[in-house]
Length: 375
Image (cartoon, rainbow, N blue to C red; front, side):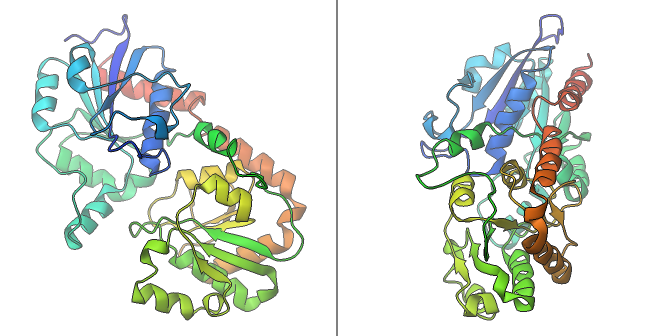
């Protein structure tokens, strides 16, 4: 195999479609791979990008890919056509990687999750491994900015290759499709309401980087100072832990919980819950400073209260500091409606910088391809 930029590169990007019910909203990684697919197709030296399905299902209806003209194949069907293999959602075995590189192909490991923390939790809590180190040698690891601090050295040592940080990318394509199907009575997009406000917490509560604790504590601190401002606090993605004694004790020992203001909720499509039940979103992350929840909330113009220094819009508060968070929340409750237009302009300008069509993002990934392929 000889990499020839004159004919254009053919790139395979692995995905894992585990069942016919796999949703595009199941996790941010699935979206990230679609966004990477769309961006790579905008690079002039790329001839074609193919999704390599390493999962058990070929049913794609729940992934909302209609209209995107994405080619999907099994690796054995197209491996001889490929110049670059990007391991994304489905892990390649070491022999496949070795054989592909021996023929002159390049293999990139594309990391979009905090695998250092997730791997720790897998070992400590006896969870099923999602990825394992098997001796595979990659040409490069690519990752996104929010994982550089905790994971860069981890991957560099274990994969024995350079690690490069590339822009986190996004598109509203899936959000727009979901918005188009919001139930009757729902309106996506922030609208001022008189009186008390409804606050939603969307943290997934699947690992320690994004949990309900500090968002609820921020709301609790604000509620104790001025309970007249808050109508409800919806703590979504907690139904699966609702029977846990520690969780129950945490909830009932807050004024929000004891007074029935905070409620335990299931998992919902974010666009629907924003449209039907939300005025303000409060979040907290631990070493995960950029994620699609933020972008979706900002796209709707909703006040986003967050602790991410990397996010240059919304309303920032200091990490693990409930007083700082409550100060911000009370300010938003009192004053956000007077600065709606300014807020929209700020958020729209920032969202432009993470779009798949943003020229600096395209150039960053093009330069990464040129580097790994020595073009």
